[in-house]
View 1 (cartoon, rainbow, N blue to C red):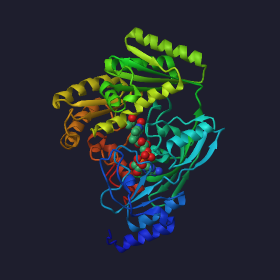
View 2 (view 1 turned 90 degrees about the horizontal axis):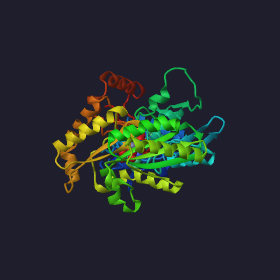
View 3 (view 1 turned 60 degrees about the vertical axis):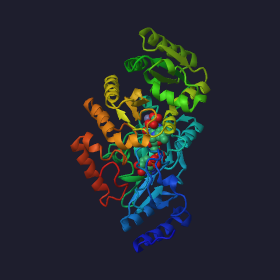
Length: 477
Ligand code: FAD
Ligand code: MLT
Ligand code: ZN
């Protein structure tokens, strides 16, 4: 199909081809993997998809776009869940993919750091660390495709936050291309540096709206000598929280994972992936996946872990449990947990939430919001699971059995969001714990964010990106 391109746009495309070579400026063919979001809710249209191979090329793209007044949408693995990494439908935005920038630049064993380019797939970062004898602890269900740049841009959480923190806590330095196309060289491996405003932490979690991350220096940890995993049936959310308290008390820093999964969430895994053989789910409202990693001997760690489970049985927190006997059994249990997102996708679109609360408020939130939604929408199904150790739930709302998912979203999404987010706000929580704001929540955020904080965010955006060309319409308008 031929179409007319305005002369200024034509000049930009020429400049981009000169900077990157024709092969890395894509305007034709099937660009759906860049233009469609992971959940297939939204499809955009890019003016061009550009694939720079180094930091200077990223800077050249941003400069050329700034000169032409064209906006740039950075993209890593395109696994984001808040529609923040695809172009809008105007056909005027440049989609900048970091995927070709995937080198591990350096590993400093004495400093316990690794420096990687932004497009490095998370699993490859983990492997590079492991080959050097270290642990890079960030772990997400999407780790086979998400990139470290995307993890930093969203401040991703995942399943090890209870011990190692979010991506923010793992980062020491960044290399960033600014909205003006300049390169901020702050790739330091310093653990102490009080020389002014913390620009690194401003960039982390900014979802491509303040700068384009091209490389990062990340922390490494010793590989654990032993890792133990248990899958426990718990009679209620209160009991899961009580078990978490016991685990903190008895495992200390050895507690590396604490996930809670509701019965309906597990029933979806059982329905769509029966070969995974989900344990214990049929007779209990919730299951907990618990991980203890340590540097001490296996025998010592195992006896402490089993002691914790015995105490939990005595207290009535746990009614049944399976302890993995091998690494492969542990992997299978984690695989079940990580398959919930895919099982939901198989079931059809639902209304997705990613909320956080003080752990102490979670039982009250679940009890009152379950009751409220069940009262308001007959037959509603709640897919409740998440990182209970961090006070973070994916409290998703699925249409009643047999009804049209698309229609349910069209007619109920705003109403359900209001019910859920109002409950979150009343208990002092956040409407985005780890996925970010993107465009999915940009218009909801003002109702739930402190207005002074939001105004300061807008000032920061204007100061760093006065033309408003970096990922516009995401995070703040
Ligand atoms: P993208 O989706 O490409 O981009 C995400 C955002 O970052 C966009 O706003 C984009 O513009 C921006 N961006 C990307 N790269 C850069 C860069 N180099 N510089 C500046 N901005 C950039 N998230 C969690 O937090 N915890 C989980 O447990 C988790 N599990 C998931 C499981 C599955 C199966 C899936 C599909 C997703 C999951 N996610 C999870 C969400 C997602 O994987 C994370 O948000 C991830 O960090 C996104 O990385 P990405 O490379 O795919 O980024
Ligand atoms: C998870 O914890 O599995 C992810 O954040 C993905 C999701 O919310 O579906
Ligand atoms: Zn999550």
